[in-house]
Image 1 (spheres, helix red, strand yellow):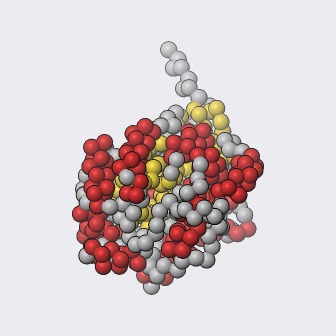
Image 2 (cartoon, one colour):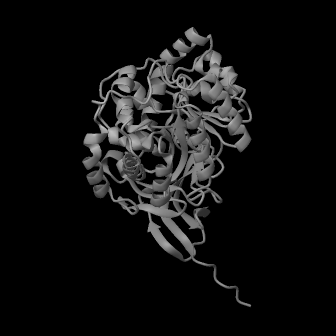
Amino acid sequence: MTPSPAAPADLVITGCTALRHAGAGDAIEFTEDASIVVRGGIIEAIGVGVELPDAAEHIHARGQVAMPGLINCHTHAPMVALRGIAEDLPTEEWFNGVVWPIESNLTAIDVELGARLACAEMIRGGVTCFADHYFSMDTVAAVVEECGIRAHLGEAYFSSQGPQGRERSLEFALRHRGGADGRITTALAPHAPYTVDDADLAATADLARAHGLPVHIHAAENRDQTDASLARHGLTPIEVLARAGVLTGDLDVLIAHGTGVIERDLPVLERTNGRTAVATAPRGYLRFAWPTTTPVRALREIGVPVGLATDGAASNSSLDVWDSMALTSLIQKSTEGDPRWLTSRQALDHATLQSARAVGLGERIGSLAPGRKADIILVDLTGPHTQPVHDLAATLVHSARSSDVRTTIVDGRVLMRDRRLLTLDVPGIVRELGERLPALVDRSHGRRIQEYGT
């Protein structure tokens, strides 16, 4: 009997150079003239000499690198609406004088338009997954569902909101967990130890444990916060989280920033057995003139994954993870006084697999391999600024730009092809957002959603 032909694949990519993870750490290799077969949103085969089935869609990618989609491990996506509105200010004035007064004006439509614009920017920059920590997150979830990107979402809350804030965060996490055909994962999202009291932190830990949810929180954002916490509590922000039961071995915790992590925090973080991760967003730290940066080397040595992030565009003016990748490498070299750290291959590892682990998806995304989700980007290296190529890893980290991403694929679905967005209407978003800006940026009311004072 003649065997029946295999069903057509969803997508076949041919002629690319594929970035592969060959083992732990910076063991990254590049396979030339590779093909990738995608079926049902999953990478079915990858490599040289792969048998190529018929496919619904075919991309010939000569001159392009196929790599895992980048992951923005901590952002506030709707804050793109505030891009450039609070420049050249210290942290306290930035929060209290501008950002938190404006955020008191937010409506669901403002959040929706900001999320749409942010997703468009990230898809165009090769980001296939982002971890968002913000308000009106039902609206953000709907945007994620529509535009096709992957997201790890948490509804932020402060203790000043009373128990209702924590309850809304839990209800959101349970309602949307597994949404968008599995592209949405969720977390509880207390804002920070200086805005969420010990009782709320302990309650958060209990809820996370009871419902099998991770926690996404700002902590030890800068050294001033650590010093203020030591003066007030005799504990660092990391130790405050540990005392409240957040940093225990049975909870997955994503800590935003951590530039205030000090040596006494490292044993606390190490005891979590790799279930705690840190997201670093270096451009914002430079902007606020913080004296320290995330201690990537020390965290890596104790097994804590460090993912790359942008923070919100109000503090960064950009959702460009390529920028974060290059800056992380350069700033770590400067901070450590060692040009051999962080290498380009290590930076690529942090941008891909380490970031996937940071958002709890290390077994599903972050590398190109059979059985992994087909979250793939194609990067064009034929431009003059990327030629000649002597070291492909260095070219990707230090020469390539987000605008070199030609194609972005999530769950096997092409969201951008040849720089053309297929799921979002940017001119329409910008037009509608522009109409809403006067009401959004008004600060004459004198309100703010919270007081910044660590």
